[in-house]
Amino acid sequence: MSIVTLRRPHFALVLALPLALPALAAAQNIEQGEARITATADVRMSLESGPATGSVKLGEIGAVVGSKIGDVRRCYRERTEQSPTVRGRLRLNIELRPGGGRVEVARDELNDRPLTTCVLRALRAANYASLRPPGSAFVVLDFDNSAADGVERTRERRAVEDTAEVTTSADGQREARGGTPDGLISFRVVGADDAQLQAVHRTIRATIPALLDCRRKAARRQSPAGEMEIDLRLARGGRGQATVRRNTVADDRGPRCVTQALGRARYEGASPGRVRVILTFTERADAP
Image (cartoon, rainbow, N blue to C red; front, side, top):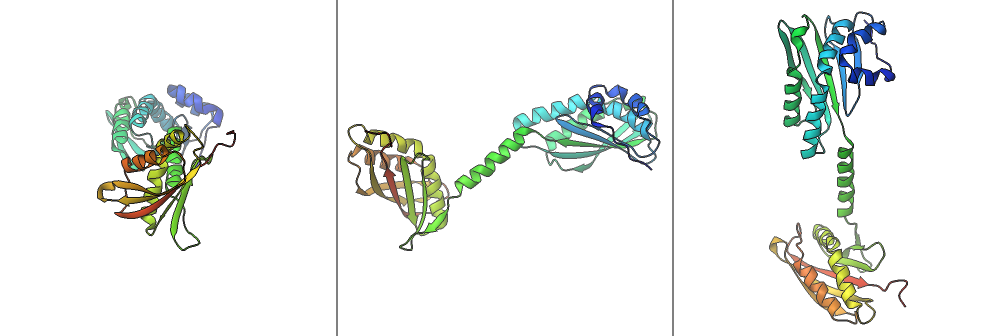
């Protein structure tokens, strides 16, 4: 029993000219026995011979299956437009029978019924009647795409960003910090419940564009630099009520804008209670 793998330069030929598979196998002088033919594209396809199926018969099955690889890729392309994270492996068993062939799922690692159904429909429509039984093969389809990698990286990055580091201050209070990369706005959320701090921190970070507009309003007449200590009371349903307790920002329009922005925000995942938010506006480094 032998295993033969075609060299990489032939991959595109197998994919583009599936009907040439028997001739290709003969040209490579593949001996009878177990064999393997691999073709790679956006869908990576491998054919493994079943019991009592030699390389010639495998090549014939591969030619018929290869004629449908375009339909399989179309199934995957259309499915990823709806669900870009679908990826995985599908192992199918093809058995030649008088007048046709049977295609069944041997192992499904895709866990995506629409894609599996579409692939089965495509391969079952192949012309197996032109092949003489007996003969069988395993078709292994590996589905992968760069969009899935991008989505997963984005989710991982978002999960890290959404998880703020909660520390204990010098006076023993739990707090989470955040702000803009340029330092124009920074904030601290102070409270007793870590999950609540995480939720409020996440919401304030999402409200940064509105807070930058508040800083712009505070800078119209004089320096916006200053600090606001805000009492944020959270109610059920994610609503919040913000009240400024202490303020060193010269223009009152800035603090008024901040309380409105924090009051309109929705604090999903935050339990009812009270937290303190210390918000700081700084002057631009190049300001006169």
